[in-house]
Length: 125
Image 1 (cartoon, rainbow, N blue to C red):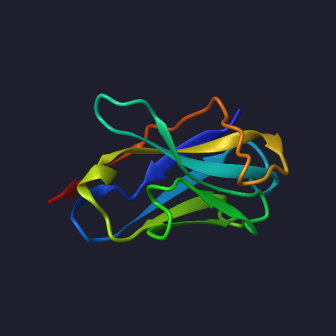
Image 2: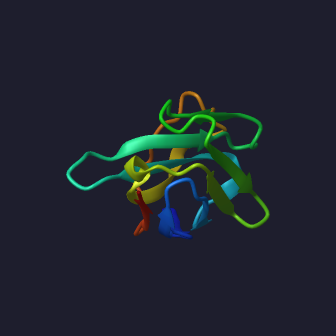
C-alpha cells in the first residue's frame, strides 16, 4: 500500500507560480507512473498531469498544457508539479496518485486507489 503526502499549496495571485511536492512511501517508487489530480468545490476530481515511471514521458490535461510541468526525483521518491501562469479556475485541492501497475506510460495513466490528504491551491483574481 502506498502512502502519499502532498505539500506546497497556498494562496497566490493570478499569473503567479507554485510548486507542489508529493512524497511517496510503501512501494518501490521508481517502478510506478505518478499523476496529479485536482478537485474544485462542487466538482468531481479531475486529471491534471502524469509522468511515466522513468520520467521520460509526460501527459497533461488540455487546461494546463503549457503552464504546468510534472517531474519526478526517484532518489527522493517525490513527484513535483510546477504551476506557472496560474488562473482563478486552477483553484482546487491538488492530489497526487500512484498508478497500481508497474512500468506504465503517462499518456495512458491508470489511476490508483490511494490518495493523500491533498494540498489547497487558491488563486485570487
